Amino acid sequence: MRARATIHRDFTIATVDRRVYGSFLEHMGRAVYTGIYEPGHETADKNGFRQDTLELVRGLDVPIVRYPGGNFVSAYNWEDGIGPRDQRPTRLDLAWRTRETNQMGVNEFADWAKLANTEMMLAMNLGSRGLEDARNFLEYCNHPGGTYWSDLRKSHGYADPHDVRIWCLGNEMDGPWQVGHKTARDYGHLANEVSKAFKYFDQSLETVVCGSSNDKMKTYPDWEATVLEESYDSVDYISLHKYFGNEEKDTLNYFGRAEELDRYIVTIGGVIDYIKAKKRSKKDVKICFDEWNVWYHDRKTDDQRIKEWDWPVAPALLEEVYNFEDALLIASLLNVFIRRSDRVKIACMAQLVNVIAPILTREGGPAWAQTIYYPLQFASKHGRGTALNVSVDVPRYDCDVSQDVPYLDASAVQAEDGKSVAIFLINRHLDSDLGLDLSLEGFGKTRVIEHVELSGHKLEDRNSIDAPDTVTPKKGSGIGLEDGKLAGTLKPLSYHMIRISLDASA
Image (cartoon, rainbow, N blue to C red; front, side):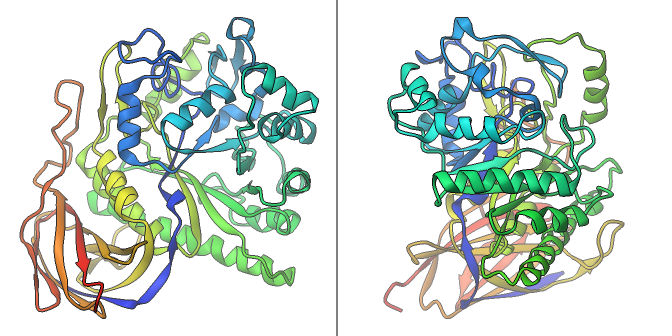
């Protein structure tokens, strides 16, 4: 089986926004407590932040992190997480039936974000609260001083404003499970008024309005159309969420779900264009895919546990242990975001630590990278720049969720400095090598400067506390440059990141 492909320097898609490799931290399970924050841990700094976790987070080069929810935010009082820790109240979190101690709040998150070299993306409660509380939250975080809320922040030891540039207008407000669930019309009106108020404060702030919780919702895609009718002129992004699973134990069908993601993005892109035309608007609303990941291994068990437990503090929850099969799907999903970089400008893998996450920790013990860590790492480090069109001619297959799925999944990004191209390839075939003949046109002289791969593993192979390196990248083989073509063989069920150096004088 062979694949022929072409990449031309001039056939570009769009600039890949660095924030498409973002992440998410919710006050849920052990994402925060014993995930990033664990006073008393042998690696904890003076603020209680685990340095072993931070090292792994920095390894991902995460550009932006959404916080503090998620479902959690829809009944959250942000004021509970500020001021002296010994005076902060413990509250019931209705979303996950746990107790929240509020030992970490917005100021601590700001401290952690600086250490993690990441940008803050704050979500506000538009479920049980509204415009006034959101406005106060903004003033507390972003105003220099001389007002009640900004001076309160200063009294808490933060003289300089946090200057948060992007704000989520609630979370999954289309979901009946959400505290404060609203109709599309009511939510769109509220989100528009909040966004307008934020722009009155600072016109350069960016806001994200809630789209569908997933593309299987009964209200999809009417929800997006109605919400954007109410808010198009004031917001900058519409959020989308989607989680993926292989309950059927059908690997090729599982891989076909990447095509589902692509259709989701294309559909909502069409809705955006429709509302733009209807309003005779000149602005472009973009997509913020601020929750996405694999989530199915323990989902049913966790759903039952939540119903039965008695309001614990930071219990183990949604701690998916990912396998090699999941890593290959994650690589394909990242390729979709690159190929749709004209639409998707922000994306947040949900979540960052412990809860459906690329990083796991043991309370009082080590932290380690899961299988899905590595495709995200390589895309984040080398997938920034200009997305290039990859024309592919390859055998395809049909499955339940998608038709005409290519066995070769590919994307390419020319680096911001123009000196290299990163090519991301996945051979989805279960047992067949894939011969590769990839033409590089318009680039001049080229050479391979890096090739890493994930291959040779059983689909169920996982990393664990006892065997953290079971699935890790290795030096790639079997691919080389011949007369301006990248040629060779891709092993079955393999992921490759190949960087090509470009002759600047060409």
